[in-house]
Length: 361
Length: 193
Image (cartoon, rainbow over all chains, first blue to last red):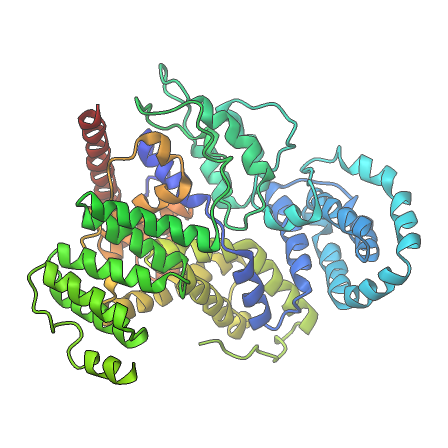
């Protein structure tokens, strides 16, 4: 049985698949899993380092530089300067490739065990360590020329963007097809992605907005940032496309802002008579803001949306749950009004609950 | 349900070697496992649990896992765990799953907004939700995670021929869904003008 390994998808399908391939897991989830596995929390840095080594191993790069440098980084990692050295060294460890992997791993074990003590010692001897890290400047500059080396803006982004095709923020925008080379230091799926990335069809004008996405991706530190370079993905040209819109440059709302935004969308959709769209936004709200501060409002909007789509039983269930959760007179009244507005019996959602609320008040 | 970490040393290997292997597995495959759980229908929070559980299973069976087949092993566990999650969701009849998945897609935003990758993933997820589970599993492993047919067959523990036929049907379905969605977008854009 022979499988067709590569399918030439159209631009839109390819864009969808690229977006999915680019998604990365939250670093918090990785930390929790590492802790559940009994790996030291501090070992996350080692995970990142071993990833760099493994990625380069997959690349087949060669070199003998990383062995001593991983140990150097382990020693220097107790200071901020050392952290920078760690990030650089992890990339260089990658460049060393397969031959140095076992030794680098041993160095990582050393780091995981002793870096905790190193942090304390580093606080006391920061000045000395800083001088020590200076002494390694020359090897660092040599490492920058090593194959597979990627420039890391700082230690934080080194851990947050380990899947990103890292580019220097000041580098000029590249051609759409060139992301294949940038992806070469990522994991196999990303490499497959790059290999399969089609070129932009002739006659298709790439919106200028996507040219700015490169820098935005480089600079963002959101742990949910997908890894791929969207600028390289061919998409359908749009009459609605606004070339001045820099979607990637907009900071994603978090916390209460995100809740307000999602609920605002749901409310607007309801106001425009599109309850299914409202339900979609409410579903997003549930997924992104579990236990959010505006949960009561979300549930009430959901009741209304469900009623408008004719899902009375679900609306009833959600209304009752909300009344149980937040049994205030205002909630009860509002749910009741919603049912009445849809021609449902007024005592539907809050049967037996109004009395309790009345007694409580 | 998180399990306590396994402290038993691997036969023939030291505890340090075991830790190093687990770290390497985490670094190489955690994203892919988490992503697969998401694409197969788990919410991000549940995907965290699925990924963690998959690695705990791998930790417990580390000595049985072929080092050359770690990805297949983890993906197979993730697919099965996510199937359990899907069944639990269906049993609980969550409110958010009450509507037709495809009908929830809002076709009006233009392709410029489609550049928002989250939205693209939502569109893709809605398409994946409309696929039968067996086709969806194969499609996610092969088309999104870049696994070959034989690798997917190992991960899903099924014959290669079954993988091939399911993948063929899944691709056809995906293409049809994407075409339909795109035409709806174009129509909506035309109506807006």
